[in-house]
Amino acid sequence: MAGTVHVIDHPLVQHKLTLMRSKETSTSKFRSLLREISMLLAYEVWRDLKTSLVDIETPIAPMKAPMLDGKKTAIIAILRAGGGILEGMLDVLPSARIGHIGLYRDPKTLEPVEYYYKVPESLDSREVIVVDPMLATGNSAVAAVARLKESNPRSIKFVCLLTCPEGIKVFHAAHPEVPIYTAAIDERLNEKSYIVPGLGDAGDRLFGTK
Ligand code: URA
Image (tube, protein in one colour):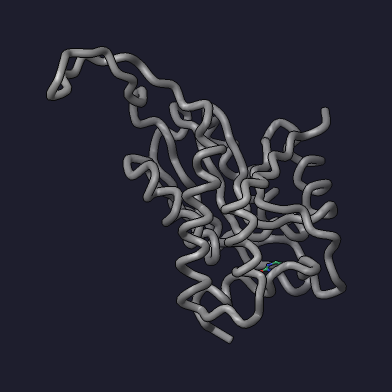
């Protein structure tokens, strides 16, 4: 089964992404852009949220108006850069539950090793959104989603800012049923596993660590 990739090519998203890519963009601007762009990605990611009609009264007349059903979403951020997307998505859906997964790459085996895992209870009744700005090699994303599947969530979606053909291939080989939402698919990975042209190290740019 071929996996689905949604590229969100809205002009506002593309404009903000260009500003984020530029090496001239400061840490504080990068952070606020990631938050804004994540709100815009959230509209597409949650396009299928269910609503029910409720009775309200406007100042003019009573009406039946749509409201979101329940609070059954969990956003799981892959540390450390996933926190940047998490904030923007929470601005749009503040009732979502939050989880974090920390993974590092073992220098010998090159396999992802989990060092932190804290997610909401009862994931089996929730739609899970896994967020990480860069889907590069795909290894952390594959490991994070595999770990979350142990809790049998109702569904899983993966949200990133940028990806590349190599990352998509690895991710969908492991999790073909998990759709990817991204602002762009770049050309390739370089020998250091950075996305080209990309935007550099998302964590460093977000936190100003380099
Ligand atoms: N992680 C990043 O932060 N940037 C890349 O280009 C690839 C992985």
